[in-house]
Length: 324
Image (tube, rainbow, N blue to C red):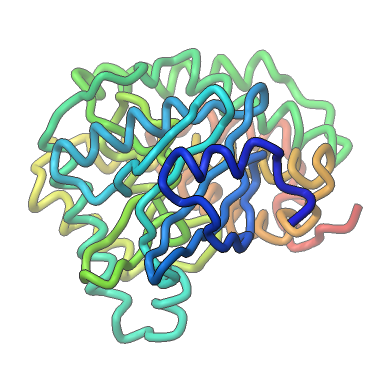
């Protein structure tokens, strides 16, 4: 494969995988590339996350921490972070998303397993990762006004947007302490189903110490597949019964749902307009519908008021249009 980096062969040889067959795998929204390497009946996953666009060290650190604490992260077989190479345990080809779509009768038990994994993760408390603080929440929410609003020709009050989020997030941050490990992108396309019957975690390199509701929102308000409200409610109840997170948990769930969904609308717009990946525009209507639903919660009144003042009803009613 002529387009592979020149140092690939030397990395694989040093890792004991010299002369392995290499097959590229579909990529994601980042600069990372993935390959499956096979040799003598054995298989492994190869990730290339080259600097300066990527840094594999956070992924390696989170993977090792999760594995040390009993979570199903892929084992690190070999790594050369300075060159962006990481050789990982191969979880196989079965992914939560495609499996559920093909076997809808398995949907509820698989979501139950995913929720139970979060319960187990949250019982560990905060890990040695950066804190998900107000500055980061605000930066992420700001992607909405930075990318989506200009793309729709909307002149909005970005300062009041930030101020509304400051008000809404203040009590959430108080209740967030001391925090739990937040994987940041925990959803059906980032959960693998290895042959051993477990649920394998991937794409967790951005882990932070944050609020226990965040990954639950990521799982149940999925940007890429529909989760019926009745299933979302059942899984939310399952988490609350097991974790007893407190009386304001559902308010925090709505706030973080709105924050995440606003961020995703901005990110998907950026991927389309800056990075030439227009397919992400087709996902925005689903995310927008989730955002509107979250905004109906009383805990989001300041942000909902900003929407009423800044986003025309015609835009809010016609998000199905993704024309340039």
